[in-house]
Length: 69
Image (cartoon, rainbow, N blue to C red):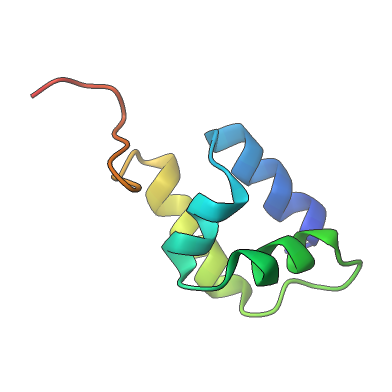
């Protein structure tokens, strides 16, 4: 996974760097630095799992997929 792919998926989901950082339990600055890098994403499996959860609509800091219960 490249930083561009990471950022593109994050933006497509509609979450901020801070929300992704919360999901992967990293400081916001670390996620920002990773997205700004030209290197492969470290711990890409961690980001992939988080992105897949988010794409399926799991809750992020009180956000849901929009469905009312």
